[in-house]
Length: 293
Image (tube, rainbow, N blue to C red; front, top):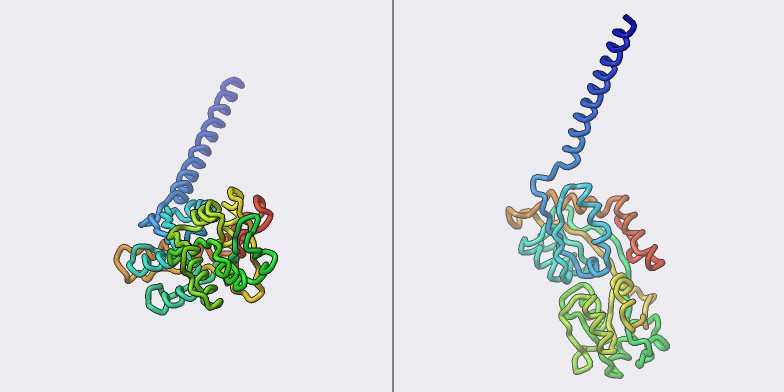
């Protein structure tokens, strides 16, 4: 009799175990399905400046966005000017660029959605040159970008320009303008290339160039260049980035929901923290300073 009771108790216990396991499995399957659910249109086109790519920032933070949102981001890395041109033509969903004056014109031209442009982060530009610095920029114009550019021109030292309508190119042209110089001649090389490639070209040509600090820190270790001018107190070397959702009325293919999801994500507190931490471990300093409002 006792043996039968023990058998019955064991069978009952096993039934309860299997029943509980089945319930947990069912709940788990539902959660997994919800977590893996994709947006109606999961493809998102991000047009951005080469510096966000060449610096390694996007490779570091985008996987978090894709994991959290279900969107798959197609990054088109070009100059800020070309990125905004893509937005105007409806060939991108969202922009991450660093040419504030041009961005203002873009928004005022009706090419953005109703929220317009939002600040994301900033860093600064630096003037790079050979380690022996034949123009003596570091000695005589360490914190004076206009004097640095003037010296390069006066001494006809090679200067490699991105010449690609990027934010960096526009910044460079604004410094020449402030110096009242029209850059032209054999000493002025127009590369029509991204920042990483221009740094490599400048190194090979033993010349000078203007770079954003983030890209320099990421690729400069492979060159014989150094920073010869930086931290100009006038603010002429400041470098602000903004995020803009393309006006969904451009065409029916604009992924407005995905663009807004990205914009909200990159200015969120959690992502701003990720941006502020990027580069600290490897370079001993943050490559970008988050400043979303």
